Image (cartoon, rainbow, N blue to C red; front, side, top):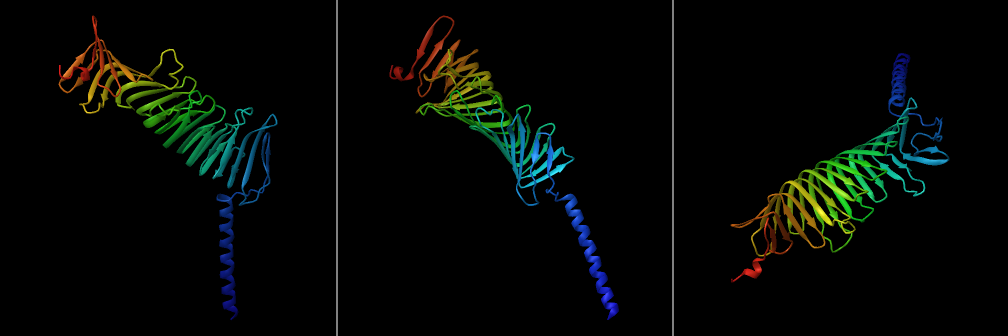
Length: 333
């Protein structure tokens, strides 16, 4: 009986030692003791217990420049901060009082470099601009948000209030100027503020959005659909603020321009040239650069060819004369 008791006690002691070592291993690698306060310079993390929501603030000149809430915080060497389900608020402009809001499933921050690394379900919001992806880097001092893998974005042009939505493989966003770069199988649309202006659908390998100029620059494998026109080229730009411009061209295409136009109750019209300019609200395009237009067996050439939306009327200019071709008027003659 005594031997059995010693054996049982020995087993219990062995199990308790193993359990104690497991707890030490767990605390060392998986759960950091959050009861320690960190007060280093202008950074303050309040006294927290494990399992509580962490609140983090960074203050400069008596103003909060960074606010964080997170379900988990791990601090490594007082340099690297690890987060679970973090939600950041950054203030670049206190007068406007509009922060940059960033959230993700997990995150890491290098405090001294002010670089934030985000993973899984990343969301960024700044005023009317939204950006979502799976992986992101935010460089606060450079006002730079970099995003990749399943990128989707929504930007509102502050001059025209037009809404640009797009998907891409990679994006860069300047949180100060609101300029954006989208790269890799970019697809999207432009929703005009004016209800009578149609949507513009676009595709390209790369797109640059200039917020100050209210322009969208498209590069490589460009394709734009506008009303009855489908236009392809290697380079293009779309001007959002064309109504207030001295040159009210809405879009310009260059390099291997191919145009397809759907005309009711007629064969499609196809145009070719080196440059095409589109204009609103007149809804016509000008094709130049050895242009030609084909419709069925008919082929038209000239120095400049003007095509109108929703109609078969076409204006052709050559070196000597200018004619207006309207098949509707010539029927039966």
